[in-house]
Length: 576
View 1 (tube, rainbow, N blue to C red):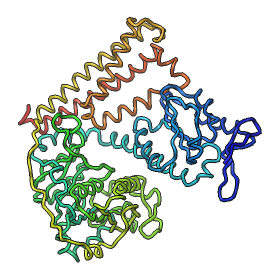
View 2 (view 1 turned 60 degrees about the vertical axis):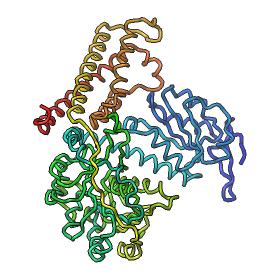
View 3 (view 1 turned 135 degrees about the vertical axis):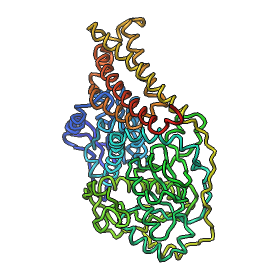
View 4 (view 1 turned 180 degrees about the horizontal axis):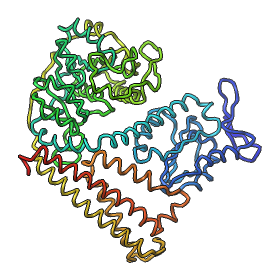
């Protein structure tokens, strides 16, 4: 490796790879390489995230810095360790040089990309890096795409279920004191095999094995979602736990013939309210919300949310200490061109579009049709399993016949059951109703928060209108500290921060996520080059915050109406 002077006066790195010499960028027209990079940043917004692959000699850094404002953040992934270690120039506060390691890249993406900035991301591979370090480049692109898809799904989920989330959460508050927190069962079934039952097309074949080895299955801790309860019961297999996380009414319809089961039902705040209200068995509480909003409930445990109920089932099996964990009906693809097993298909499914969108490898190494959503579920499951790759405590096996699941090698269910040590006896999840939650007090606090936030949104709106009506052109960096307009803007910022950082904003669920996404998407178009000018422009700030408070007032009003109707529907005899 050596630095070589280019024809146009820059320096480029030459490396030797597989007995051949290669340049990391154009050795004759290096300036063109820099220009190509800068051109991709032409539409850079004031808070855009920038991910670059390759730094070479760092010659592009001075021009790159001119494009940035203080809110921009740049991550440069360098796959060559020697180059990474030899960069000594000052990068500045908002540029980070990172030695490329797959786990580090995944972590950075997870920590920096979310639903608020997913449409505000720039990526560029410098020079010849994408071909000379193709393996690393392909990995990086895969993880970047996956993280963006994951963040986009949050927005989609927020828009789709925002109203039902509020309704379910309020209705379920009175169920919580009648339930047992999930952490009561930590490691109660250490070493007991677990069977996680999902509704993929493989379930019918897996079910044949479960019936054939029913006496052995009885020694396993069987965890299932709502969709597969009916199939298990009809085949004479009683699950040890049912997990219900989907908010929609279809979850109730799938369970309506089995509401009298004595099997404990695990739920969280947003689970379908009709199912929880009518299910007669014991209930187990998984907290995703109250542990962050109610004092005294910080100790409550959540489960891994990878997009489907199967992720929660797998995590619960691990929390119980079970091993091995056997995945059945976990196709994550259209095995035999079916979206679900025949035994786990309901009338609800006829309303959904199940056409394949892409292809992945199946357990035999062949291509199999799937969807972006199912593939997202698969990657999340693989991510979860990967945290145990260096641990002996738990092993995962894929007994399904659909997509290959990294970290869970395929094995026949019957073979595993015949080879498994059943010396550890499973322990049932006995009730322990220790949670105290005053539903009325919680709902009253939520309604007070909504009323207070509506008042403050009104105050913010009035201040913005006042500033705009006065039609002053003023720079906020040139005024005195006691300037009335500066004080108005500072108070507006205080109103915004107090709302967005209030724990009770979490109760707004999908409304809050959608609001933050859309307010940025529709109203924040400030380019990086204009940041200093516009952030100090009084009229620009007033115009933006006027849109902010208008949108916020509308959302809060809708939430208040939804919450009020749900309180009347479910709590009239207790509260009103």
